[in-house]
Every structure is written in C-alpha cells, then in structure tokens.
Image (cartoon, rainbow, N blue to C red; front, side, top):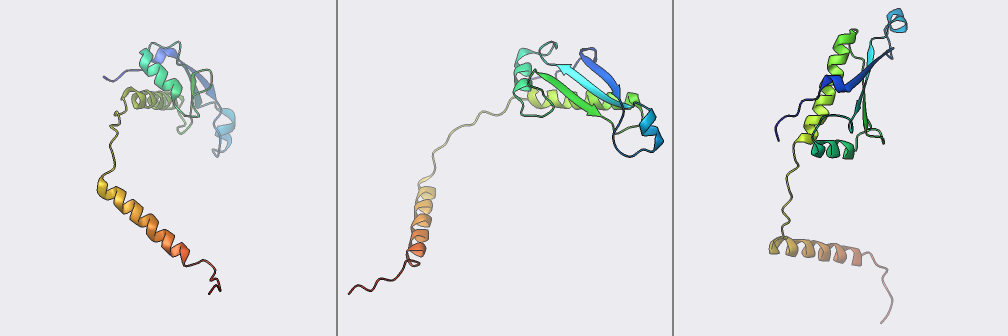
Length: 135
C-alpha cells in the first residue's frame, strides 16, 4: 500500500507545561504539546483506521483517539512537528500489511529429534527415582 499522509488539520494540538528539569523556564512556559487525533473522524482509509484501532499501543485510547505528548524541545513548533512525525510513523507502521503466514508441517527428522530428546530426558529423570529393595 502506498504511503498514507496524515492531514495535520485533523490533529488537535494543545500546549502544556513540560515535565522534568529546566529551571524556572519549565515553570512559566507551555512548550510541550499534546496531540489528539480522532481515528474515526479522520480521512484515513478504512483498512488503516481498523488496524490503528486494533493496535495494542497505550497511546490509543478505548474511544479510538491517539494521544501523543512531545516535550523534547524548548520550541513549541519543533514539538508540534515531532508529535506529527510520531503520528505519521504510527500510521506508516499499520499501512504495511503483515505477511500472510504459510503453515508448514514439521519435517520427519525434526519430529524424530523431538521424540528422541523427550525419551532421553525421561530416562535421565527415571534414574532419579528412589531405589526399591524388592528382590
């Protein structure tokens, strides 16, 4: 499937205060970004929407909204760009269809090896048994 571009107009940005160290600047400037992207309301193809919703990613809520927080830069614009890039990366990861698995039978040799291994383990365990005084 061709690369699907996320429309930046469909994402909702909100500026928040960043966490962590940063001195006085971190307490007075809201440079971190929360990106919220509603999967159902987006213009993405239906197949990609389904795979996005099915992702076992903590950034996807039960309501089908992707929430990404970007706070690495001290610039609001750079953090917005980074959040959009992460969203695009997420969409790209589900845009590629997983390869269909072709089930195969185990070879005769592998079956024999497996059974031989089980028999040898069994014989080792049998030697650990208590010795009976019959006879």
